[in-house]
Image 1 (cartoon, one colour):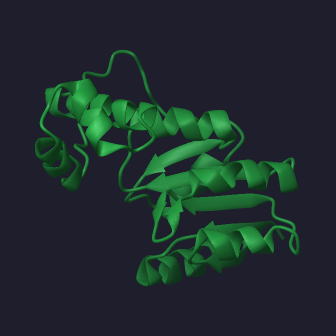
Image 2 (image 1 turned 90 degrees about the vertical axis):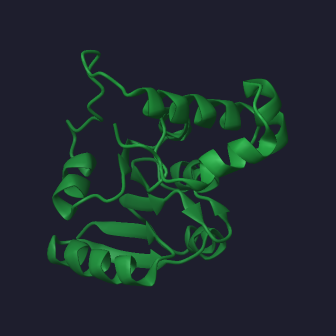
Length: 173
């Protein structure tokens, strides 16, 4: 039975996902914080990890390297409600196998853990101007290590305007 480390701080979502993944044959170990999940790495062996990006105690990107070091063949899937190309690229570079935007179905999660599954980014896709702006903001934010003021200066926009744009949910298309 494959063992899955599941990192999610939303109790209701976690409950439903754990139930569904258990039905799919996983031995799910759910954690609500990065620190508690990190402490379990020495005690348990995992074949899969499903990580929410933004949690109360930070970003789960910091946990990816630790997971890869502790479990060489682990399949890591990053799941987030704040999807951007910049964080997807960063997650893949750190060792994640795939990246999905919330909401994602259990079928999509299972497919993302599959051997031949990749994120569909065909060059023929047209991206809306709002989505392009969101991606540019996320890229600049990553380059500035999350510093809002430095990002606003780089993008030549007022800091408060940038904060308002970041408070909105990401544009889907």
